[in-house]
Length: 256
Image (cartoon, rainbow, N blue to C red; front, side, top):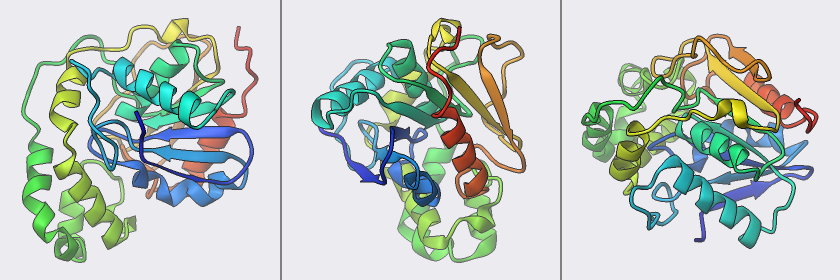
């Protein structure tokens, strides 16, 4: 499967994976900083952005990870590469690390580390995004409306440029893969964190309203807190996010 992506920079390859409902453009605020030291590849997961829907039933995070691995290795020719992801992208990144595909993994507010499967429920946020999509270009130029639309995901909506905010809302409302991937994600959880044998960095935004840090984590996992940042922190503090990703992808390969 061919996936849509943006690529820039030079150095060790670092693949970036976005949250549920978003696309590769959530990484735009940090790409230049990362590209100064990494060959950065921001990917649209299957069923999101400009990538086709995954032909898998159900499209679990592990199935998404397999598609990303095949694309990275077979189409991009990557051999030794690092991965980072946010939310759903964090879970997919952890699945890639568990599969032995990558040299390191950095997961920002990763989904899946909850204690058990979550009950199915309709996505109120997605419905709101669908309703707002036709007027997103106008609405996001009004500070109060932009704040109301983004505050559940971003710590400081005022730091998101109106055009980027409108794109984020439209991507969330239009993603064809959202319903099936959301259902598959909520029906499972990631239980193999302790079995990953490459460096693992978990990044926890301080103002996250969606994903909490588990009480117990394996001793070899490195934890980083992002001060004054929300669930999608790239606009909140691009410098801190870039620093966390560069540090996570520079750790020694041996962790135990």
